[in-house]
Image (cartoon, rainbow, N blue to C red; front, side, top):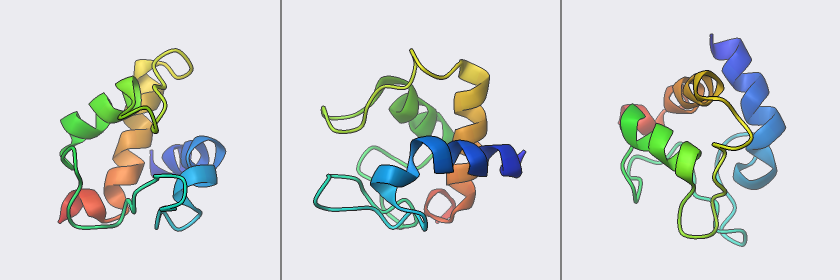
Length: 85
């Protein structure tokens, strides 16, 4: 459900990655619409990133979001374009 994913993104991710998912270099938050991602843009890689965090900058969401919610968020972020390139 992309609408649910969009709401999750707005509530949990937009503060760092921005409303348009273009990222914020000052915070170390990458552009989620970019064609190349450091840790991969497959849905599996994205679930791993959201679940476990990355590099001390991206927080781990496993203790805050359940696996189903993480999957919904991942599907939404993937739909933004970066995961599809």
